[in-house]
Amino acid sequence: MTTATYNTAPYDKDVYWDRGTGAFVCKHCKKTYPVTLPVPLTIFAVVKKNFERLHQRCKAPVRIPEPTETV
View 1 (tube, rainbow, N blue to C red):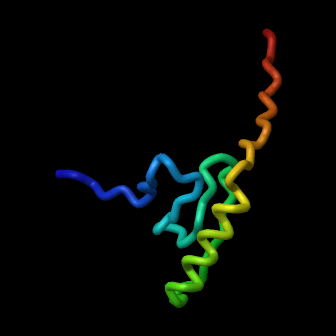
View 2: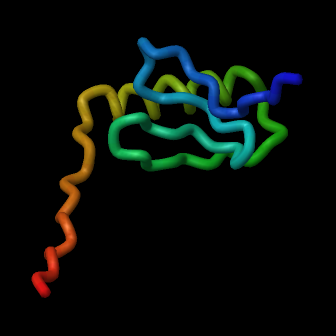
């Protein structure tokens, strides 16, 4: 038995649609842009294109490592 995966995204795109949350998600910085549905398909496409354009060259946020404890 196979399970369905909701966050399937093509690997050549920087942005994907998360059907579980109803939002576009950037693969780099993990920022999301929720879209209230139902929405006309033309508006949906414009929102996706603009979100992709904004996140085309974004960098992953800098992660500050937790300080290590010495015993």
